[in-house]
Length: 120
Image (cartoon, rainbow, N blue to C red; front, side, top):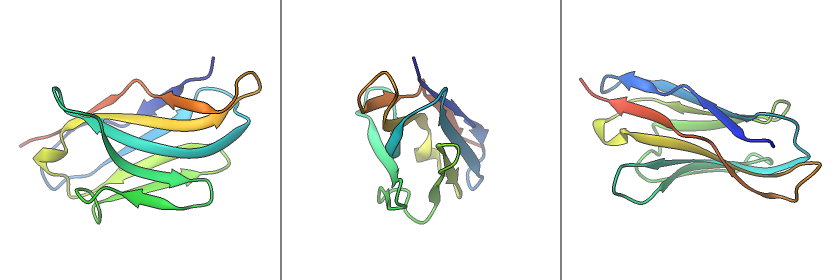
């Protein structure tokens, strides 16, 4: 079964940068959109950014101007460039995508989560 593979988390100092990547593990039929969420222990999962296959993007107010989402259509790969990171950006970041495969109708898929820690 296809799943989402994330990479790129880690530890960075305030003001630093990280880039997260996400891609399906196998072949998909049709991709509709991809999103990044983040979650702090004890709190609800928060939508960070979204990108559609026709290039529309959305950012939460907390990351607007600092994060940039992009998609490689050929590889169905999504990236989140995170600049000027702040301690409050510390969270587990989850990739989410809505797509269909040859064996399943379109539905939401989730990555395993990658830890981003911003600390001096």
